[in-house]
Image 1 (tube, rainbow, N blue to C red):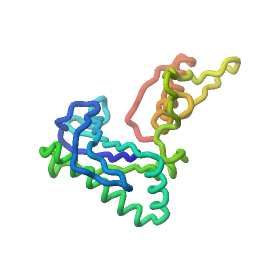
Image 2: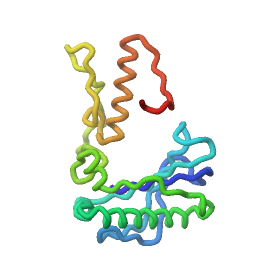
Image 3: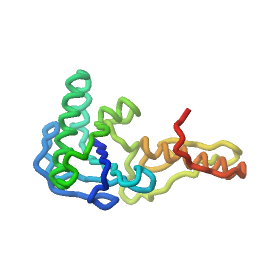
Length: 193
């Protein structure tokens, strides 16, 4: 998939959560998109008060991932195409929310090639694996029976896997260690040293 992250120093009119909306046609690697999914990530401490964090994610089949991987072999062409498409997506968000005109800022862009380069993800998938139909959505506690003080952490512990799940798995592991050591778990905004 391709993800475009946008920020604004004003509240977004979209309610937190997901919004699927029709848009002007957008062609990416031979596929035409007629709708976008916008996720409002504002709130819950993700943004300063009165600000917005938005994510537009476009699903991409394997052939589009291959296209991005080939394009990335020329870093300058890749950068230009990635940024041009991000601005096209931002324009379509502005079509839907004209009140954000002049207030919306491009924060980051991830393509299938980004996920492959950064995480080694197969075919540029942001998720590590897909559950088969009828599978139960479950996860592991990360505890290993018979090995006290051994905790597993990573994308394979929590479906559907991927970078976000790996980070969440690490947080849960830290919470388990704090609980085992009878220590308080506290989240902080302090920068990582």
